[in-house]
Image (cartoon, rainbow, N blue to C red; front, side, top):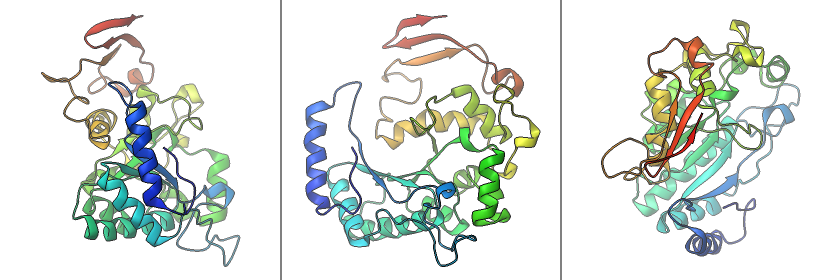
Length: 292
């Protein structure tokens, strides 16, 4: 459920969302978090950066939700209701700000497992990556964005510099810091949460051939991750993010029998085969509901 920027009464808004949860939640739909926007995007000069934009001296982006006390109040009220806060955070300034708020909220609640989420994380400093693991916050990353799109890449270089433009969209570093990494698609900007392309791009850090990609579109290859890490980021880690790991996210006795069967082995087949994988069947509650 979405909250407007710097909302006047965070506690009252959390109570409103809790009422909505009671009204609409069920077995297959559950309201588990509160969405806020901290900033915008680098290509529009609205991502909240720590340093100034190179082409706009004295300006570091848009601080959409920047009231520290209100964010701390929101985090503590959300924690009392069992909610996480899901924040749009592209720039390092936005991520630094929220992690400071989370640390202060944890001092109040004593809850070191709030499972608050930061989505997108285009540019993140090493300091914030470490704090993500220490506060047990959740990085929601998008492998579908990691390739080098020439138009966006040129803007990144012009606005934040070549070094920072090359260091975008870390994933491996979050795993190394012990964070519970999850994948996302950011609908409707990226309308398809593609399993095969997420596996492909998380490993190659380049666009697939079907997107006119190739080695020349690779960016920040040191942040490539393993197939097993990708699998976890799309299954059990997501279940943990929404506090449903006891019933979702893995094939185990006592959990809901929902799964998709694909045409290849994502953990062991050649990466070129994974790029062309298809869905063979879909199973819901142990019953086959789709067959190719």
